[in-house]
Length: 116
Ligand SMILES: [Zn+2]
Image 1 (cartoon, protein in one colour):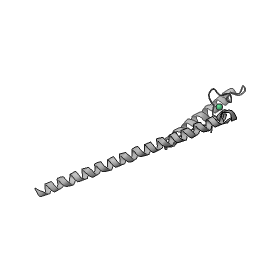
Image 2: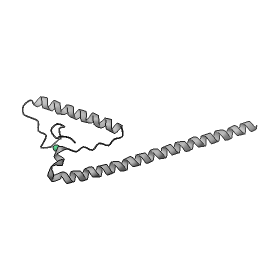
Image 3: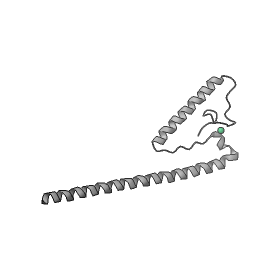
Image 4: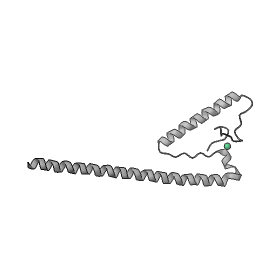
């Protein structure tokens, strides 16, 4: 949940740079945006999916639309998560099978060598 002013929502009517101390406010919002990016990167690196909801998207007129979008993103993220988990599971099984086959080949070679 991002406040439109504090997080600098681009092209949003709720993000207007104050006419006094303009540089201070612009620098402050820029720092917040950098922090947002950094937090977002860290969460994604840990496997989290980030859904950003802006303050203005919770206004009555578009609230339902926002909730639908967030719900759809959660469902999509869940599907992506399950697909990634499934791929990892298959990769683990493949690795295990290859390791087992290698072990069996080694043992059968060893048997052959011993029987010579
Ligand atoms: Zn906004």
